[in-house]
Length: 146
Image (tube, rainbow, N blue to C red; front, side):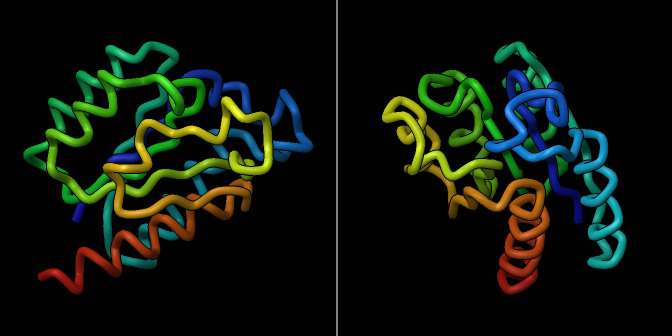
């Protein structure tokens, strides 16, 4: 089983910006922790972070026939990344949306996700731990469906 982990704009700056919202853990550290958990679960991960929506769309198109699910933190595309949203929806892959901060407790524009209606669930507010929770839940869900 392979899961695609997509990281949107500005997530490459984790550990360097707004620690009160995002924590001090870097994206590479999150990926390492996810890899460790994936090994324990017996699955594989693919990662892509991009500050460009088109690169993320291309990755979904390329991977849709060879991965079983997606974990996505759309970052700066959360409220308006409609081409990425459409690619994820068209993939028909079960997808979990992750946000490091609780987007529902922040500015109004951050609380609106164009992805929320097409994902199986959303994990928000648990900083890096949200990715681990998303992986656990997604793998469990995929195994139940086998």
